[in-house]
Length: 109
Image (cartoon, rainbow, N blue to C red; front, side, top):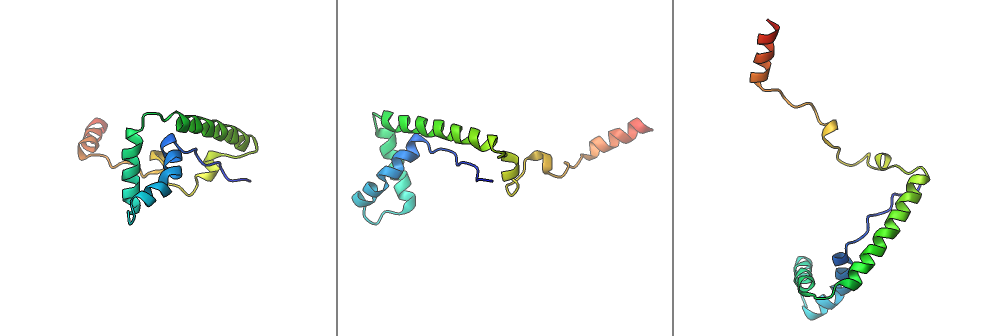
């Protein structure tokens, strides 16, 4: 069975991946976390993001096609999520309050 397709990148992350090296060149010695902050500042100040938004839409469409093929070939999100954290259904039952317990006892008497 093939691996589940990865979710597509947003317009911001597509842009950041292309701009990361330029940000590094313009800010020598900049830390990784600071690159992301600087990238966020630049992205917010950009007027025309249409190129990156169009690329993000295209990537999302390709992802949706890949997901349909994945599911048609027997892929399942449940099977691939086996190692991940589980939702509320798999948690232990919640402890009941003493008040609720005493009310049940009163009703059964």
